[in-house]
Image 1 (cartoon, rainbow, N blue to C red):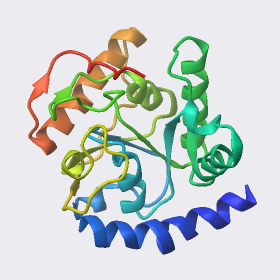
Image 2: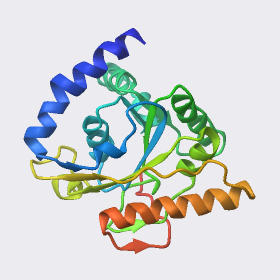
Image 3: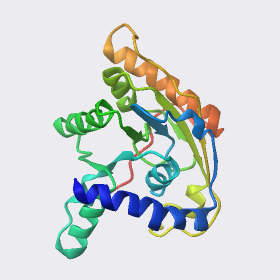
Length: 225
């Protein structure tokens, strides 16, 4: 925990933050919609690996996000360094094999919100293969229902141009982030599964309105691993 308190601000404000501003010249609007205190869920579209970094680096508060389990289990010096980095910047390991692992990730994410923190998530579950916006999975909705945290929709644009699929290191280029008005879902009644689906669809509609992407009413295919 002590190392996280030191490494996170160092990474955000001294290393990656300045690099982000120089390399990607981000246009950011709507940051005033992100509450300054208290729990909040940032729900963003997903175009590139870079997305998971530009959202936390843009928001003035500390942001936690999910990271693939593989980032935390590598071997050797490089693997240990990667795992230490992701832990220090607040990433939460998620096993995408499903089952109990998915519930564990949900529990860890809820714990961040219950402490009054900020959690960022991509409801599509994986990167869009073609730049369109795909149907959302219900994780963000279930977190909102469980914790009462508001959801701020986020539209990211341009990251798929600077980091197209298959490219490990992004190239310089302009990106933009738009933060929409916070959505409140506390007090919704009805069967949990149905309510989670309704809330998810409302979140995706808000992201669609911000991003202007073509919407696809089906889940995005996961890339072959």
